[in-house]
Image (cartoon, rainbow, N blue to C red; front, top):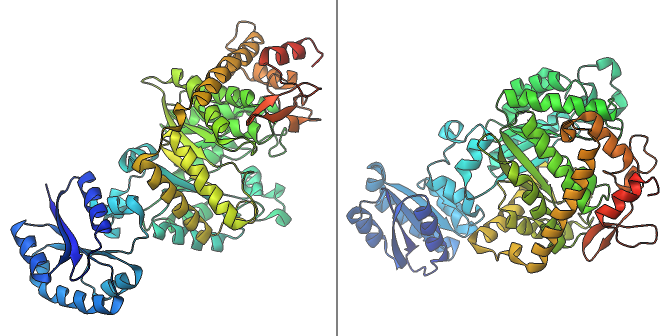
Length: 543
């Protein structure tokens, strides 16, 4: 076991940072020795020798001018130990940290902005850029396990020009704050990458970076090969699914596949396929990734929530997503849990909704099917005011930590105002990391609220009614994976949302309202409808 000693140098008596550093060192497997406040240079060096220290942590949090002189004296006195292989790090206020960097003596300088995750990574021996390529896992499940107890941070990024996006990817990677860059490509590339004749130059850069060649993907991935070597993933597209899967797997080592079950087609205007055809294609794509051992996420249930569907319909869609993933051979399933969708949900009912999703999908888990939890803030929930948006981001992620996520999909605070720049991404992740740090230190168990648990039980019971109604459409088939049956469930309104009104692929008769913080189906008079009453009315043709 390696030994680290640490204390506050000279007349400095501020040791809170020192004790936190040593606490993290213990978590990383070090033997720790706390020297205390106001430690002289001679005592630092003599204890380093007697304790046979491998690493010496020096802290100073007083004036920068005094610190500069003291650190220079320390570096000169400790030079012999340094040459013998003892490592030295510094922690202090930002002005003193700048002076410590200027000495060139300290291997690592902490200014209090790094967060526990970065400090822990350093103490595990994983901060050196020279060995980062080897030490930072290149597969998402390995990286989840490597980073525990902290979740991976994922953020969407894609600007309207390739050069701006390249520079942003480099800046984000160098910051070492983000684990997964979700490359946002423009809508024309999602649908028409392999069909230049269908592309419209006036749409170039609309919704993301305009990738137009294999080389564009290659250079974007290469731009991320620095810092903490973040994983990269991107959209599965809305046409030519398998061809695009082959391309992004070969060029950016697509970390995992994220596709819908019912969406990205003619029903939502984002692709050329009709509803039944797109379900079949999405199932084929699940199987393709499953055959290659690549994890799959179905970014499905929140699309219903974004269209004001009831909580019950959203949870039903979550179950169908997991069920289809397992049926088509997926071994590692990333369950996306988007909070604040629709944005009027109370935190209590939102958490109950997400717990209900886990309650219904967890029975599917076994030795062949593993569920990994990914949470995120609702796309439509951000206020336009950027200060308020920052507060919303932090509060939402603190709530999400009650789900013990493996991945936190950070949605930038700028979402309601503008596409996130690299600076926005880094700041959003810093805000998120602070909320995560606070929660990991010991958040209250919000899931134990009896009103939340009562709501979970109610939702699970209601979802069983909806699933049974879909099953009955199957005439003995495995209805929950049958594209014809799933399409019929949407046409008949068993799966429905208010914003599907006048959509030729859907029923569009559902009405919902936020009631007591939850999104409920209602009748024409505004009264709450149980799922049994809603579906019976639909099937009688009078809903």
